[in-house]
Image (cartoon, rainbow, N blue to C red; front, side, top):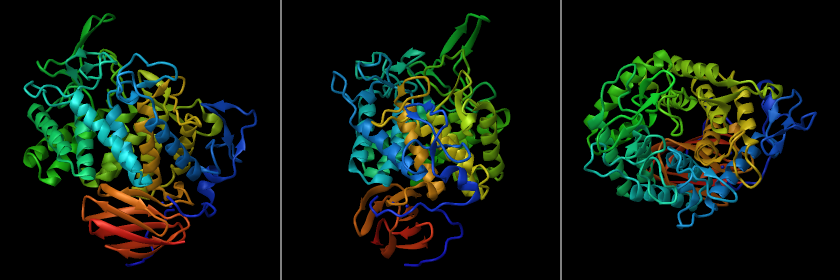
Length: 530
């Protein structure tokens, strides 16, 4: 074991006794000062607003962000895993995009709902070590593969349908707007990327094989694209290859669903399969280069960052925060993607802030983030994502100037989580996309970039460069296994300290209780001293 002072201090993992939160001075004051209720006891979401001495919003729960963020993601997970089933016995979140307390909502699945949940739950498993999280990931992936894949002999066969037109049928068979037989290649690519992660977590090659089929079909159907057409269309008929069209009655023009910028999932899918040397690695690299060239030539220059959402019609083009900021995060995580990675990421973040900043909460010193141009309402998911990517930018560049504003955005988003874990979209419903899969991941990623935001009285894995296959948090040790032998992990150890460590070298910062592990073994044991 090698113990060394880290180059950059950060600032815990489940089960150690508490210690007072470490407060940063000056720049962190607005986030960490003792909260008070707003003078008029105003309400936001499910709770009365609390503010610090400068009037900045602080979380509704606990003594500060670390306690609050941990609480809301645990409550959200609890609500999800105990959600009722539909009359056909299928979990409610597999057939509906909106939760209703007293009835089944008539709308079917959200387009990226399963992908988002798989993404968040992968991080949540490492954070909690709860086997039920992995079980739920398998349940969702297995169900979609069994009940929603387009026939393999079709032009776009082997890709998943994103929607169940009859929400009670238990089958996914089309697109919410385009109708039966239509699918969204961007959502299929994201599913493929999450299936590779699930394969790494479980060793089940069924997930890898489906990911390869998705990648092969995408590689076969890719095109160079141009200003009006992305490398793959947004909505396409799986059998005929016809791109969905809509007539706009206002101008009598036909609009084609031939464009979207949500291709970060595709980049991840091709990266992962090529690195594993599975499928057609050469073809995947070639396809990834084509998509990269298109992203750099068009959206990174003209800032047309739409569309994404399944419920927006083709004729109503809409720019989105999610497409833009998700690519910004990818660029920050893959600086080799572009020599000017820092400027590219900063440009996207500045554009999304300029386009989607909403000042309705300025009185609490927080600028929240709208969802899209066609629905200019601030979102719990979009506000927390923008915050998390800003913190990732800070971590990767050393520029922490946006940190206080990012924390206030995360604080604001906690208010939409009720005490029982239901999560409301502002002025809307309890969406099972925005409030769950597209919520939890932003808090865990924020903690990884800034471990001061993780609990000070618990032990948690915040990040790994691999995929965790199993992790056990014990009273005196952490034992975990991962897919890659050579990887790096980031832990926060609460009030504990590391003792004997097998299979790794570490960097330990006793002031922040941050442990950075570099291991060359798939199995690692970390002893803990209380």
